[in-house]
Image (tube, rainbow, N blue to C red; front, top):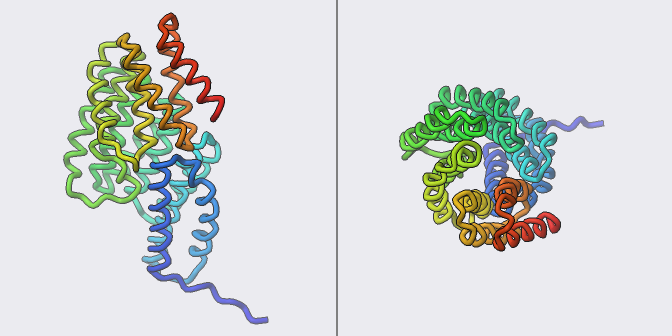
Amino acid sequence: MIERLPMRVGEADVDRLEGVIGALRARDYREGGGSCRELLRVLEPYGAALRRGMMSEPLARRLAGVVADLHNLKGWTEFDSGRPVRAERHFRRALELATEAGADDLLANIRYRLGRMYLHHRTPAEALEQFRQGQLAARRGGRPLSQAILSANEAWAYALLGDVRRALDKISLAPEQFADSVGDAVPSWSAFFTANDLAAMIGTVRTELARLVDVRHCREAIPALTQAIDGYGPDMMRSRSLTMIWLAVDHVLEGDMDRAAEVGLAAMEIADGIRSARTRDRLKPLSESVRKRVGDINARDILDRIATFRASA
């Protein structure tokens, strides 16, 4: 019996895998995690097969990083599809491979995404620990953009904890770090964080503070969210929908139910075409805010539409 030798892996093989991951990440932003979760599942064995091949040590380290990002994206799409246990398993595997690759910026991004999952499920203390470790990796990697992403999300966690001072300190730091990143080469995993996303995060933090601490934070939230929404194109439809839901919350808190209905219903129309559990979950704070004004005809319209949306999802 002739023993088969491992296949030889070259730069083109790794480039190809990296390109497919980038394309699927773009699809995730545009159509939601459910649109590409199964495609990523099929891609996993291919990444594992490449790792068993013959290649130079530098290429093996690079491939470890690319496969780490494959698990990073898989974890994100599982999270976006409402499967946090599966998501965490992929994020943990991504951390192992990124450590093997010595990819500090990728490590920072994985920590960010793992922390975002904890934030979404309202465990801000656990999220802060992930963001703290992510900041250490981002500093080692010398990536101010990753630091900005993590600072903005630390601000969100502090807002959920009701710590206004720390929330505002962190959300004030993020634009400085973002400005320091201008002109840097941006890896695909952090390319989403543009000026639009920074504005969305500023608005998100202010909205959470308005909900949980003082409604006057709406005054800062509304223009930031509006700026982000106006800047999002068809390649970022999930972000547009999520941000519009926050804007609807702010209008409810300010008592402008006409505008809240207009924005909230438009957000759900967009969300109908996106395969994302997070858009459905984001409707919970909107529903909670609207119920306090249930005597308003617009409030009833919003609640009826939320119920219909959840039933169809």
